[in-house]
Amino acid sequence: MKRILTLLLALVLCTSCAALPAEERAFAVVLAISGREGAWELHARIPTYQAGGGYATVAGAGDTLSHALAALDAAAPMPLHLGQLRLAVVAQETAASQDFADVLAWFGEQVDIRPGAVLCVTESDASALMEALKPAAGTRLSKALDALLEARIGQGVIPASALAEVLTAGERQSPVLAGLALEGEDIVLSGGWPVGADGRVAPALTAQETQLLTLMQGQWRQGTLTLPEGTLRLTGATAAVELSLPALDQASLRLTLQLADNPPDREALSQAIATACLTLLSRLSALGCDALGLARQAIPHMDDMAQWQALDWPGVCRRMAWSVSVGVEPAAT
Image (tube, rainbow, N blue to C red; front, side):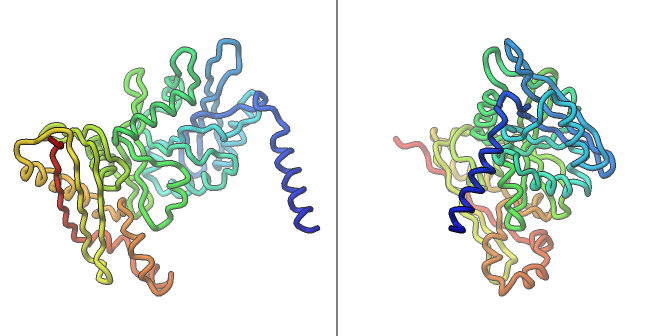
């Protein structure tokens, strides 16, 4: 009987949540956060629900993020909902400050937010960025952003920094967030913003560096890799990362790349890619940024969480000695 009552209560709660028709909510497609403790600003891009479609920007400000969200909701023509969010955007100045931890915690408290929304960092003005977010004629903004995100993640030039993954990674892996910018009238998704041991974003990675990172993470496996020496067409790639245990002082990365073409000097090419990867890994390690998730291998070998907390993992990352090897397999003949 108790179980039946529980199920009935859950059904009533779900029914009450769905009682408001979708057209009577303002579904934010993009949400931007800027400011600092005591002075927060939120901007949201929402459909106008008028004949012929269209989108509008609403804004709210407050001394806390919760107050700013309440002001944003009051500014919207209908109750605001985050269940269709595609981009969660944080201003670079905010993401590079001590307040960024509060922003991430606030995101984690939003029960209606879409977990697949991509967490981005931008240096562009929030108001101008929002106004530039317009879909092609006859296309929903949500659909247009889905296509753009899929394409850019598929090219490896931005990390797949879904909000849910960033919030649940904990100490197992340091996040690298997608870069978003307004260039002229164009919206550009490119590059990545690594989060250092201090919980703040460090200077951004270029699109080329982000490709290398997503390649090393095993996120990106196929497409055109851009290097200073030129471009390569990858038909496949595998990445294997190994941490020395129990010493925790060395880590190795092994990349195997399958190419669509036959390079004239595979050994020189392998060395060039290995050097580029090593340079990037050294830069991330200096930040205490565990972008490849070495902690996933280290934590199971701790006696308990107290030992893990006493370890000073960011310090371990900074002292980590990396070795990188790259195997290049030419196109089949």
